[in-house]
Image (cartoon, rainbow, N blue to C red):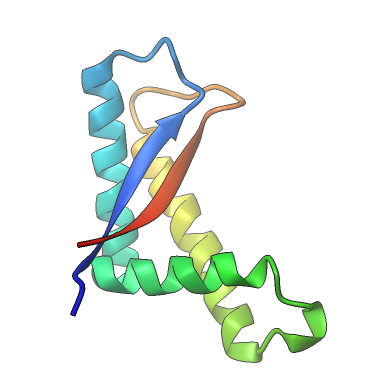
Length: 101
């Protein structure tokens, strides 16, 4: 069985020093994992949300809609925590990706 983790990258914030970037990414990851109950659950939610991109609207289940709403709330909380103390730019964003070992 593969172990799942996830990575977080703060993008489009080139003037941010590397140590501050790593701290922001760690804060984001910590809050996201806390919101979902662990890294495996983050991966499950992310996989579902990404799968919705190719799903016709009429085929999206109520459970998927609920998970999408939960993802949006969790990502917002994580971004707020990630950018705490460093501000942000209008174009910066956090990129979250699943990693399987």
